[in-house]
Length: 422
Image 1 (cartoon, rainbow, N blue to C red):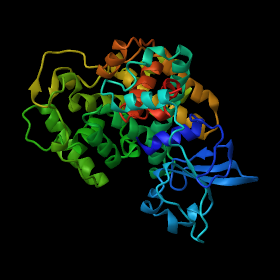
Image 2: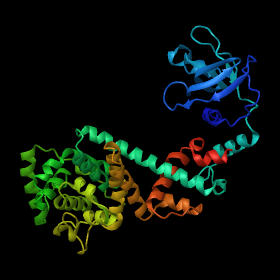
Image 3: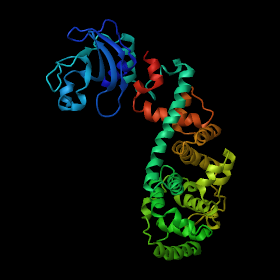
Image 4: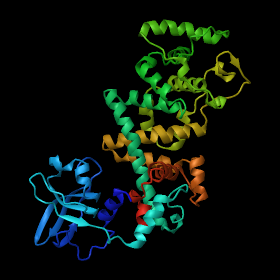
C-alpha cells in the first residue's frame, strides 16, 4: 500500500467514518477534510475537525506508519506546527510537536472497506496496458467524457507552460516566441532540439530583414544549421554557402554542428533538410505570422496559410547533392494538422488566457474539435478497449490520460479511478 491511497481515502472519505476516535479515545468528527496539497508542507490544508468538544481548524498530515513523522523530518519543521490531526494506517509510536505536546492521531486500519481495498490492490498489481482495463467499460460514459474535457484543458495548460517560459526569455515578444516554438515542432519528435537551437541562434528579426529573398533565407537557415560546411558539387548549395558566409560575418553568427541532426529511420519526406526548406518557404511567404493566425477564423484558412512548397532545388532533392525523382514536397495536410495541435492551438489558448480574451481560448478548442483524430500506436491501444474518437480534441485528451495518469499509475487522481474505487 502507498501513502497516496490514504490521501485518496481521506480526501473522498472512502472509509468507515462512524464513531471515529483518536488513539487516545477522543471522539473525532470530520467537518471538512481540508484542501489537498501536492506541494511541500502538510498533506491537507485548512481542515475543520471536532475533536472531543473542540472545533479545530488546521492541517492534516498522513502517513502509513506514525513513525514516518520522524523519518521525514517533520518534528523540527515549523511548517508542521499547525497539524491538528495525524492520520495513519497504524500508530506505531506517538508523535509530538516541537513543544512536546502530543498530536491527536487517527488510525484507519480496520476502517477501509474490503471492496475498496481489494480493487485498489488489483489496480496496483495489474500489468495490463492500463491498470483499470478490466473495469474501464463499467464506467459511465458521462464520467469519461467529462474527465476527457478536463484532461484536454490540463494538456493545453502544460503546453502553455513551455510557451510562458519562452515568452519570458524573449521579453514577452509574441512573434519571436511563436517562431521559436513553431521551429521546434517542425522538428517533430526526432529533431526537436536542433530545430529549437537553430531558432534561438537565428532570431526572427534577422530573417525578417531578408524575407523577400528566399535564397538568403535558405542560406541563413541551412548555414546556421551546419549543412553548408561541405564542398558540394551542385551549384545551388554552393551558392547558399557563399551567401551564408557573407551573412554569417554580417550578423556574427555561429552555426550549429551538423551532427546534431538525425536522419536515421526517417522517411525522406521528413528529413530535416526538407523540413528546413519548408520552414524557409513559410518565413518567406508569411510576415508577422502569429498576427495572421490571430486574424484567421477557421481551420481552412490556417491550412492554406501553412501549406507551402519549398524552393525549386528541393523538388528534386531530399538532401544537398542527392538528386531524387521530381515530386511535390509541400508541408501536407497531416503535417499542418500536427502544427495546429502542438503549436497553434496551445498558442491561441495561452494568448487568450494571458490577454483575458476568451474568444481565442474557445477558438483553440474549436480547432481541435474540427481536426480529424490523430493516428498512432497509443490511440490504437484505446481503440482496442472500444474507445473510438471523432476528432483531435478527444485524441489529445486520451494521450494525456495514458501518458500522465495510466503510465504513472495515478489511478487515485483519475476521475475514472475514483468511480472504480467506490
